[in-house]
Image (cartoon, rainbow, N blue to C red; front, top):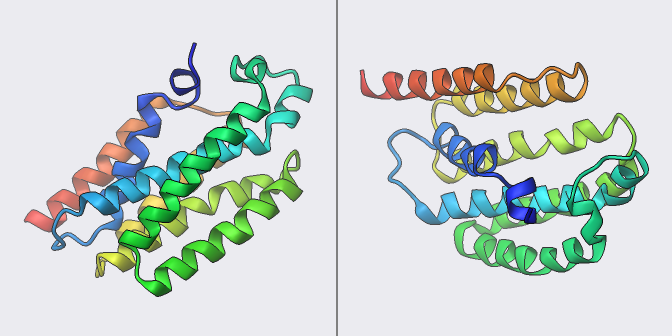
Length: 191
């Protein structure tokens, strides 16, 4: 099984950027494909980074994931083009202030993640990407209805916390709540 199929399956990893983009974006803003690609790249970069940073911990925990058999070096090498593309997209899509904020976020996120891996506090660091991305999309598109990005961030935080802390996972419920949020936003903008 390839790494892409194993760790980056279409659902949820391609759905997440679209969801963040839609709930974070101001309803009156025109579609911005570059911004959507930036969000996708940001999510993918942090997903691969998470596997890279937790590689040894996951191996020590006896997790039986096929990507652990391939080696950490392959993940590290794949992060180079992903990081380069993220930097390029950041330069093309973000204002100078947003670029600095994104660099500061990643500059803090990455070392803190390494320090906290294997500890319960890692969950808070891992969850920080969602409010950050919603805020970034909202600020780029000048979102006036801030409750949509907040609702989206709370959705992801609740979903991840339930899965990681309580061991609860229900794809149908996750999809239903996500669909309900998207539908509610759509109806609020069209009625």
